[in-house]
Length: 199
Image 1 (spheres, rainbow, N blue to C red):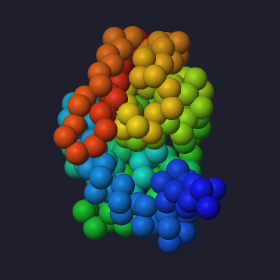
Image 2: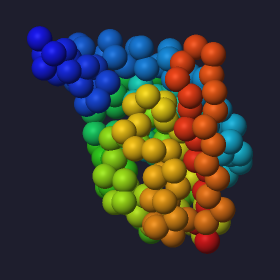
Image 3: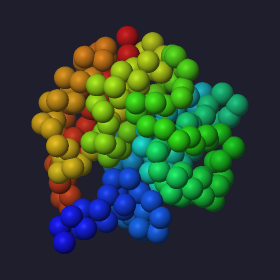
Image 4: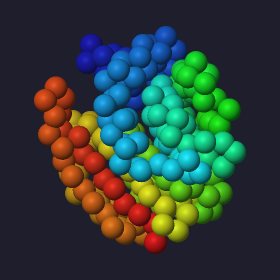
């Protein structure tokens, strides 16, 4: 019974797929909205920014970021391995009128399909727990421009390592000005937040 329950959880939230994945996506859109808004605020996006969103899920953060940047110079690239999440995110972007400067790709932290030093900002909300962290941080560092900003936030209860490990991994990948905080919340577990910059 426990194994079956874990499989259902993985279909809904870990590797969303099928109808269960879409239900999980709706829950994520609601439960992660506050974290998505805060991450976009922390990123201090400008209209001409090229933004990468790693593990975009149902697309709440994609829409928020796309609203903050403007074509033709600004754009948002989202990567997610789940086709169900890419479809949900595309539908959300279309209904919010931002699809013209959003590109959604199959991928993840370890393989974003972005060019070297092409992104101004990288964001990730409740996805880092699924990364091969050394490879993921190295890939994000590779695609950020010099001075590029990284914002990672994750529910503490889904992170299987101590929060300080995220700082260690970011520094090992070459990030500087790494700030780590654990923010207490009233209706959910603490949010682990990491801000960093590429030299």
